[in-house]
Length: 308
Length: 289
Image (cartoon, rainbow over all chains, first blue to last red; front, top):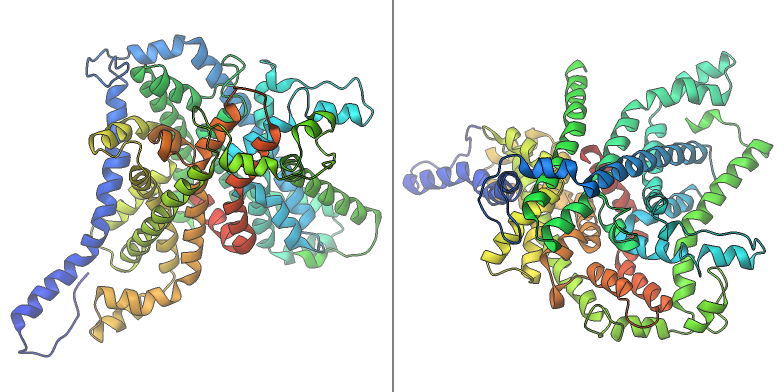
């Protein structure tokens, strides 16, 4: 960017030159600390973790390279397979249910509802809470003796029993419940914003042609919200892959390791079980999973922009 | 597009209101349960149920959670950790927001060769799962003598938060016409003068978004807290998790719920007071995840 600043001629030309030089460098100087920190803290550390994943580091980082051994170990690890499988179950259900609830509530809320603002506030407040708080509350609600079960018994449904939280076959679904409670209102907000941007003249035309409201939503409005749909899936998938707090607060991965997710696996192996090499390998696979999602998404985003 | 819907009291409208109100109830129940339970006595909890009101309201759960409950080996309640969270959150929010404002200003109005590439790299940083940086960061903090300190946590939150704040400010400033900057420069205004005289006065909304977003993110963080802090420097989220998972003695759910409320209150208050900005940050954040 060329420099156009003018000063009265003759007055300390040297000083002015110095100032000009400084001015030219100022923008770069101002952003330099951030890029230094981020360059090291994200890209440098990413590489470092990558390097560690090829070593046999245990309690302390070491640089004995063992090739792909840690990755091979990971693939054979029963616990990692459970964690990956859990991520598939948790991620799939979490994304699917959040989208369903979010879309339905957004469409309903877009029908000239009284007190819409207050209702929106209620749907979204869980998003302001820490996952640890959410986990603590849901753990109490789903408490096998004193929670939901007791409530149902007191209300007269005495045969009701609900022990999912401590049942290794079902505990992962309790995590899904709490996560959906926390994030579905957010999806609603995204879709509501999308609905408000839909051109109403198209809908009026369809209505004149005799299409019913559900048909209009299904055939015209929802397909036009594809971008909202994609960005919601991205955000939710991102939350799912990084999910750690909620599991720690609700089950700490238990019973056994039945509710382990990759993020919990990584934490446990790296910081408490002294298997840093294995933990690093699992972190790299998590990065790979995010990249696999992100690259096609960014690619399609950029292509769309170019077509505009 | 709401104008195409006729209002009136047809059955379908009653159904719509029914569903919306039921959903309100579902979203509110956990908060109600948390509040009711926190004011009960342990006896009451065992005899009543989740939604039964306390037979006699007591704040014993709250006082115990604040100053007596055990979070691991120590039994001094969560008060110390609550203040830790403030000591960590306030500087981290301030520093990351200020850095973000300047970065956004440069990356939108003082572009240089390669600045778009740098911005792209910063954006990518928003997506990275933090698991890939934990171990090297722990090693570095140890080397710097900042392991298990609040200062260390502040540094970590600044590094991994600045990508978001930069994004906020950059997207906000991009909409301001370049001609404004050019005119100011012709008048002899420099880099900082233009920022402080022209940009800062019109930045209140985006400052609110950035401050609130960062406050919520950093206050609610658990991963960095549990990895980089121990003992006395732990934030409230880690203390809450320890308290709930401490298995010595009889489980006191009223204390658990009061502690959860204490951990939740600051962000809840911010949400209620400035929800508009919170939602704006959330939707702006969603564009990049």
